[in-house]
Image 1 (cartoon, rainbow, N blue to C red):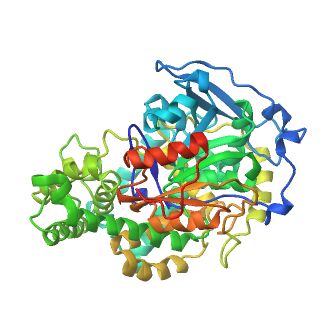
Image 2 (cartoon, rainbow, N blue to C red):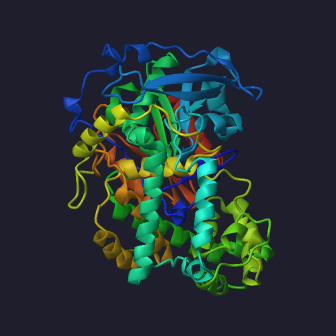
Length: 563
C-alpha cells in the first residue's frame, strides 16, 4: 500500500494517495510457479520471445544534456507475445564516470507504482547513488509498462471535451446542499457515508475501465518484472544488478522469484512484505504514518525549530486533530489560485494527505509543514495545499473475490473486439498507474462487508490514517484481479539480496524490511536508525558505504548491521 517516488537527491511522493480513493498496495501480480524446482525454462529461449530478447537499444542524446535515451519494445501479453500488441518503454542511462573500470549496468526503479524511471534519471536521480557506484556502473532506468512515456499509457481521465461536458452536466444538477454533503469523513460510520464512498470508488474503477480497458490487465508487477529481464538482455548484461526503492522492492522481489539465477546483486530499500494481504497492508502502512506523525510532534522542535505550530507535542497533536475535525465539517479555506480552490477548499482527506506526505523527508518537509499547519489553524490552508506543488504527484483467491482466470478469459474475448488504442494520457498519469498496478497486484474482496469490518481494527491500530486507508481500498473492489495471492518469497537459487530498512519509515514500515530479509535465501538486512522514507541517497555516509560495497564488490553485510 505505498506510493513513493524517488527524486534528486532524495524522495518526493504523494504519501497517502489513498486519500484520493486510490488503493495503495503492492506485491506481485500474476501466476508464478509454486516452487523454484518447478520453474519454467528461460523465457529468452522461447521462439516467440526471441525477437524481444534479441533487440539492442539504440541510444541517442536525451533532451537533458549528459544522458542517453532509447526505447524498449516488450510484448503486451507474455502469454501471447506474437499477437502484435506491444508496449514501447522509454529507457535512459547515465554513463559510468570511470569507464575504464566499468562493471556493467545498474538498473533502478524509483518507486510508485506510477513513477517513471527514465524521467527521474534525467532529473538527476543518478546523484542519489554513491560515487563508487556511479564510477563502475551505467545508471539505467525505464518507465514501466503503462507509466509515463510508455506507449500505450494508462489514463483514467476522460478526454477534455468529454470531461467538460460531464462537468457542465454535474454543475447543472448539483445543489448547494449536495455539495455540502459531499465532504467525506475519514471514518465512514453511517450507511450514507459508506454508500457514498463505495459509489465514488466504483466510478473511479469504471473510468479506468472505460478509458484504458484494453491494457488494464497487462500492467501488473509480474509483467513489469518480465520487462526488466528483457531490458537486462537488451543492455547486453548476463546478470542483473538492481536497486529498488519502495514499490521498486516489489518489482525486484518479483524479478528475483521469476529469474533468481539472473541476479548479480539486488538492493531493496524500503521494503514491502509480499506475504501481507490487503487488510494487513493497510494496517501496516497506516500505523507507520501514525507513528511518523507522532515522531513529528515529539521531534518537531529539534528539526523544524521555531516554526513548530505548538510549544509541546500535545499542542501539535491537538492542532492536527483540530484541523481534521474542521475539515470534516467544512473544507478549509484556500486562496483563489490554489489547486484546491475549485473544490471549495481542503477537505479532511486532503489535509490528511498533506500531513502524511510531509513525513517522507523530515529534513526537507517538516519546517514548511509546520508553517502551513500554523496558517491553516488561523484560517488559511493555502500553504498546506501547496506543499506538493513542486513535486510529482506522484494472493490465492479469497472468499468473495472473482476468479481471475474467469475474468481473464472474458477479457480476452472482449479485447479481440476492441480498438488497440487508448485515449491520450494526461501529462502525469501516475495516479492512474498507481490504481491500476496496486489493484491488479493484490486480490481484494468483491463484497463491501470485508471493508466495513476492517474499519474498527484499522481505527484501533492507526486512527484516521487506518480508516482512510481502508476506504481507499474500495476502488479495487471493482477491479480486474491478478492471479497471485499473498505469499512468502520463493526465490530459490538467488544470490544474497540486501534489504535496507529505516526504523522511522512512514510508508514502508521497518518491520516489513525485517520480514522480507528473512524470507530471502541468504537475505541480508541493513538497518538505518532514522526518520523518513528509505535510506540510500539520504541516510548518510554509513548507508552509502555499505550499499556501494555490496553493489560493486558484492561484500556481504554482517547480521545486525546498523547505521
